[in-house]
Image 1 (tube, rainbow, N blue to C red):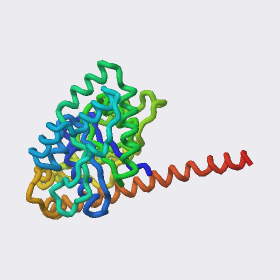
Image 2 (cartoon, one colour):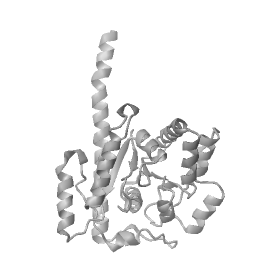
Image 3 (cartoon, one colour):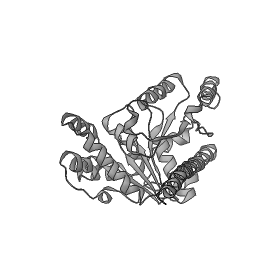
Image 4 (tube, helix red, strand yellow):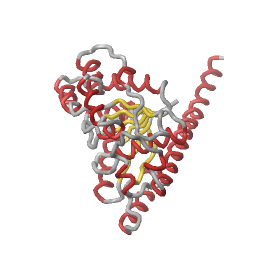
Amino acid sequence: MRNSIAMMNTKGGVGKSTLVLALAETLSAYHGKNVLVIDSDAQASVSSMLMTVSNLYKLQSEGATIVDYLHATVLKGQTADWPKFIVRNVSDVDDSRSVFVLPSDMQLTLLEREVSKESLHARLRAVIGELLTGVRKVFDIVLVDCPPGLSVLTESWLREADFHVSPTKADYVSVCGLEVFRRFKSLNPEMGFAENLGVIVNMKEPDSPSDEEYHRWLESNAENRCFRQPIPRMSALQDAANFQAAGRSYLAKYPGQAGAALRALAKEVLERLDAANEQRAADSTPATTAATAQTA
């Protein structure tokens, strides 16, 4: 089953990492999904949201992050066992015990420079493809938190992942980021690209006429495939980024309207995944039948 989703927008500040966190915890708590979060952002934002700073620093010091995995497999050409880099028992939500993370480190930017310096782009993409092939078989959902911009690593995720989702704010600058991404996607189509699962309007001001206008404008473009459920700007979602070692329930972390919006979004994400996979199966059936008939 195709289940890997690259989350990205070329524009930063759209609340992408917090949304990845919230989706992972919602899919775990309300749908019983085993969710792997791959933190591919050098800022390690979603990693720090899923564990204490001291635990993250310990992993980084011990060479147990995505940087170390890619350093071994891409720069050194070695074989590395990816499960050893996956961290379990993360998340401060008591109801979300099936969230896992492949953590990140600030050194990721330096690794990308080395990849470019040594012209190892093809090897990087191959390693990313092999990693996704492995984790697809183990986890129900794989969410890749990509950094803003279009780095060589982000391009590898976008070309090897099954789908991409673009969180965006309902403002002019963020919408421009979507257009930059759309133009990038049209380049080199022969190299393959993740299928568009949709655009999520994030951090929407509930009482802003301007936000409402941009939201409607985004919805009017069928190519965006906007999700029905926008995510409002609320203090609860901003507070969710702060890991609490004592733990808390899902409803304590995502109360009221915030939790309701996230649950509706998670449900729609699963519906779209199922529909896309069913469509792929339906599209492949006639070809298989024709091939069989011709052979006979």
